[in-house]
Structures are given as C-alpha cells and as structure tokens.
Length: 449
Image (tube, rainbow, N blue to C red; front, side, top):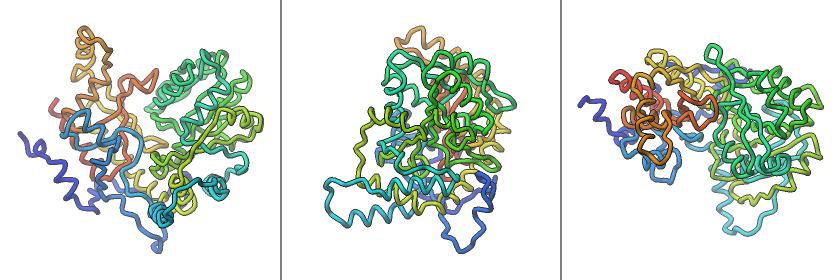
C-alpha cells in the first residue's frame, strides 16, 4: 500500500498547519461582485480561513453523516452546502453577550433585525427594501412552501431551470405540486437557458422557482437573462419566486443581480424574493430567513400561509452577522475565489473530470461523464438494479466510487433534476488544505482507475 493510502485523517486534521496555503493557486484580491480591492487595508482584522476547524462528532450533517454512510475512511466531507470555517467573531461575541442574560422567555421580534436586513441589501447591492415588507421565516424552505401554497394549488406545475437545487423537489412534494423541468444546455462549460423550451413550459404553470445564483451550476444570471425570464412569466401570469440564498457568493469579475433590482416595475411586482444569512455566515441551524416583495397583494397572500417561530439566539446571530459581518465576508470571498481557481486549475489535468469555474456559490459542478465511462458505473448500476428492489443511479455508484477510492464525499448529480446525470457537486467552502487534499485524492484515484 502506498504512503498516500496510509494517510490518517485524524492525524492530518490535528496536525496540519493553520497557515498552510499550499501555493498551487493564490486567492486573488479584488473583483468580487465588482468590488474594489477587498484586502487593501492593512489596518483591518485578518481572518484565518486556512485553519482546519474540526466539525466531526458534533452531529454535523456535512461530516458526520458522510462518515456514517461511508465509514471512517472519509477524509474530506464536501457535500451539503455549509462551510467549515470558524464563525465570524461578531456572531460569537453577540451570542456570548446574550447568554450572559440567563433568561429565555418570550422574545418580541426586534425592529433592529428587519432593519439590519434592509441595510444589508442596500449596503451590499444598492437594493432598497422597505422593512415593513419583510416577512420573517425559519428558513427559505418554509417561505417557499408558503408561497407555493398561496399560488400553486396541489396538482399544479412549478417551472424550474434544471439542473437546479435538489431541495426544491422536497418543497414540491410537501405542497403536492409537480416539477416542470426546463433543462438548460451547456456551451463551453457554461449553462444557458433553452428559451424556446422555457417559454413553452411557462404556459402551463402558476409559479417559477428561480435560483439566483443557480445552485448547482454556478450561474450568476445577467440582467438581460432575468428580464427575459421575468417578461415571459409576466406575459403568462406566472409568479416568480426568486431564491437568492447564495447571492453573497460571487467569484471574481462576476456580478449578482437581484431580481428585485430589475428596471421593469411590472416584472418586479410579479415576484417575491427569498433570502437568508444562513449560507453567507453558515447559520443554517439558527433557523432564520426572510422574504419580501414590492407587491403587497402577493405578500398578503403568502403571509396567510406563513408561521415562523424564531429563536432568540437565531435572531441575535443573524442581526450581528448582517450588522458587523462585512469585513469577514469580504475576506472570505477572496479566499473562496482562490479555492475555485485551485479546483479549476487542478482538474484540467485529471482525465474524465471537467470543471468550469462557477460565477457564483461556493460549489463546483463537476462533469464526470468521462470518468463514469472509464470505471463502468453505468454498467454496474444496471447490474445492481436487476437484483435491487430500489433503483440505483449511476451517479450514486459514482458517489460510492469517490468515497471508496478518493475518500471524499460528494453529492450525486441525479438529485438536481433533469440534466444532472453525469455530474457531481463538490463543496469548496473549507480550508484550502482540505481542498488540496481532496483534489490530490481524486487525482490519485483516477490515475489508479
């Protein structure tokens, strides 16, 4: 057995240097979302994103579930979309301060929370949001479900550009609605909308679930694209439900355009926007999110199906992040951009695996069709399905292959809807030490295949 295969994950995690950058691709300052040099000021606090922050044994979905599924040999969990970094200090400080008050009775929702949401959108994107139009929820999913209950009766169809976020399908199951997948096509590694198909499908739906930026493909939709989607939906009386939870993650030389910022009032009035700080600051378990619209009638209809029981600590953490978290996020964006660059550069030299750098999100959408053919996963899936009571997809076989041979956990592409076959999703929001380790493992496994 080679020395690499004798690698001890626990020894590595405990002993790796906190400042190991590995030098393959440096994080480039500036250019994120059109911003100036985010790292220019030497007087600013510096945050250590190279630190390997061990989340194992904390009931962490990203790590502990991966290990439960595939065993202790898993060295890098790169599945569900949250981050492995230590929380922004402003969050920890706010929680500690609140915990000094040792009473946990009913809490009135502070106006400062919704004001912080409005201020964040204005400060980061120049988007004016009236705090009185903001509806708080316990997550983007509950908000979307409320809107689907309001606008899409059971049995009706919901339009989506696919591949898209797999969680949308669970929302549709819960609301007893039906997916209307409009499969996108790929041009030079980048996904584009099939406009003829999109318009044809828009004639038979009530709502359109927009993912902006698109998870898992990484598209940051242009103003032109959004206006075209919006015009088609308006003409066909289709309400746009814009999930923009990944909006704060944009790679160099790209831009996030809020649907609510479009220069056509009628199109904007035909939409609701759903957001949270849960991706931005890795606060998913704090259960807080929001939605808003310029159309008060649409808001009233969605609010009728909304109930949010928010926790004290969830609101404290989110308010602190949205008020004082800019500097932490600005530095993180530069770091994540470097992780994207590293993955794209490295995978150019791995046969059968292709990755075009995402415009947004911290997710890499890998084309593994060549590798699947090389290791015969489609044949293995067919053989297994002959004797299995449940259907096994080639992407699930590929997930097992990555776990067993590269010791990494990735999300299988079939779960992201039509067009997800032959793909895997890799979460890059972790220490670059671990990203490099995962890529090395992957490269070695492919070389030995």
